[in-house]
Image: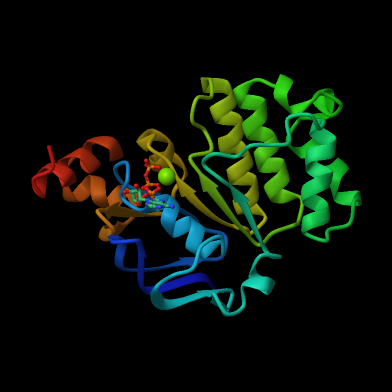
Length: 240
Ligand SMILES: Nc1ncnc2c1ncn2[C@@H]1O[C@H](COP(=O)(O)OP(=O)(O)OP(=O)(O)O)[C@@H](O)[C@H]1O
Ligand SMILES: [Mg+2]
């Protein structure tokens, strides 16, 4: 079943055209990664798909609901871990998660479950500002999951995490996939994308350069890793 369908999405900020007609679809239970250089348009895509900003044009549907027309309904079934998530610094972990539960109109009974799932019990009464970077990312994920979403957008969820904390986040993503949630991921860590992604879209300058699987891109460029294949792809189009 297709959960995210994007056809010919265009988006500009003032004079700058950021997305220039991108199209892709994501299936239920898939981990789909948007890859590409800084400024390519990954976060902009996520913002449109999660109803944070409006597309200029394009046909976009989330579980059959139209963006932006049905954003009120869509917001209730998507969870977002923004690239720049900032929790409420003076609220505890628990209070932050409760806050997001109330936005989603979720029942508070999910708060405990999510805190447990993300291994945050020990910190539930700790103020957000006192947490390490890795714990803050975990709280961000907890806040995205507390509404019981069907689709989760994770925008660079493992930036700055130590290797163990990164693996924890990978495990969480795999668990979400097992539960048939759709995960849309962006990351610059291509080892991570290679391990986790069912499919990838490489965005370059607002256009999709390749829609593929890690394996077929590696095969196409005869490289042993996704990172090397990705670099070979960029080189092939003249990117330094
Ligand atoms: N609110 C905004 N106003 C003006 N320009 C913006 C705005 N948001 C993004 N842009 C521009 O749109 C382009 C794409 O930005 P976007 O954040 O989508 O890139 P990205 O692929 O997520 O990059 P990164 O890997 O660095 O996170 C950039 O040139 C950026 O400067
Ligand atoms: Mg970004």
